[in-house]
Image (cartoon, rainbow over all chains, first blue to last red):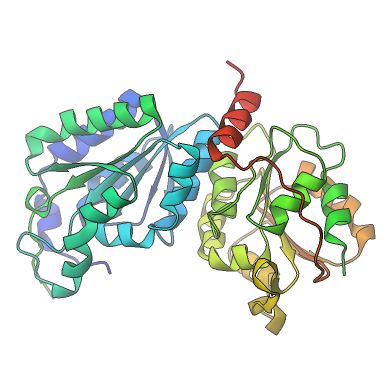
Length: 182
Length: 188
């Protein structure tokens, strides 16, 4: 599911993960659950280095749905980071969010689209946004680094002010194409 | 073998400020039968997530004790969460698995624990601070004390008899269950 090391990771435009992190700080995110993805590596590092954020590495993305519910019950805000393939792992568990009205913000790094080198990523990547919508999420797609701050900020406000489920899809074009390096 | 209703009732007696997350199916009915409480987050679905909801809650409220009560099928479906919890080492979280080695809601088909799959060994391998199996009602007082004072993460595998108990149905509206819980735990 997760790709081999890629040299582009080092070249990721650093501003957009920092913009997401700044929004996490602004809205008071206190728990971040994730299954690692190369595209999220800088954001994960920022969250791990922040003592006010509990970073929770998950064995599968659906665990994150339970984490978000528990955090909300305890009066905290939580966000999830995952790759597009992880969305498929969550489908049934997303019912918990709808049934109870738990606010949820997911940052999805896209695979299986623009310039994807691995065809095994394409089937899930191609349906990720549709799946999220069917599961009741509002979805916002970001292609340019300059839009990240505004879209993530708006998504967080909608989720936490309205007990809504919001997914921001960070396109493969934004993240950078992966290259097979070994 | 434990009588599940009797065991859960004893665990939750004089519950103080315990936060309780029972898993879908019989665990939710058992907790309801022990007495309705706003700090019960009854699950009617989300099979596999009971322990993780407990983790999110325990991380959010380190000042409170949290007990998640999944059945064996629920725990097995979310078995990876034992590793996730083991990494975070929440001192205030206990999981009490109501293990009848059966899928009770669907016709009592045997689960993996019926063949000796060992949840206690799995929890210990996942760095739980304490894990043990209990099968006698005399042990309920020990478990009750562990839930209140033991250093977590704790897993108790409660071997319960595979019997059909009458359903005791609590609130089923998820929004209502959530809002009631939040209002009771986080008064404005």
